[in-house]
Length: 166
Image (tube, rainbow, N blue to C red; front, side, top):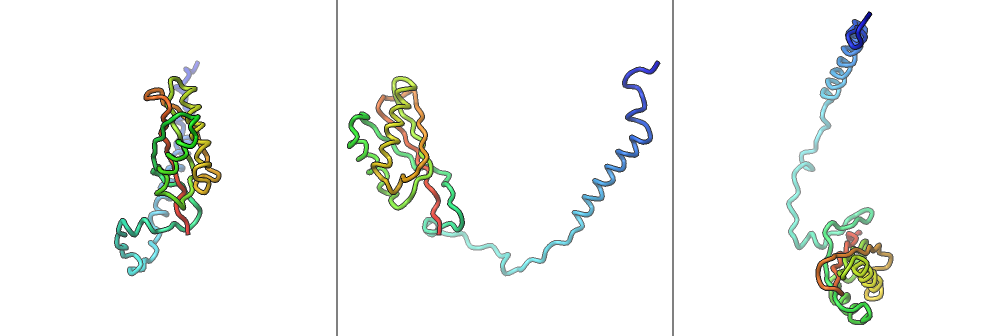
């Protein structure tokens, strides 16, 4: 009687030949890929371009589809959700330097005594964004979050703008 695992099913000549064949195909594929000639390079176009100055990069507009900037613009607002005009004035003042831009995503972290109160405050702030700057927040995706620590009636707002396009 044969014991399980000691048979010649994986060590027989046919199995070894199969593994040897697979290994040789892999070696041939690597040799074929490695022996491909490099594409000729135009030396004039391969020279590195000078690094743009920081002032010049701010005015450069991206060609192609719009993308979302990686770094958000952060602002804080505080006040009672009932005092809409005061919150709108704070949002307008905090976003004044970004006129002409369009927001893609806004994450708002409201502070409150509990999670529900913080999230409700964040929601009320997000509803006022389009009132304060309709051209900046026309179809912006907003998300309401909460912070459990800190004074109630305050919110931290992270605005992710679209990158400029040509």
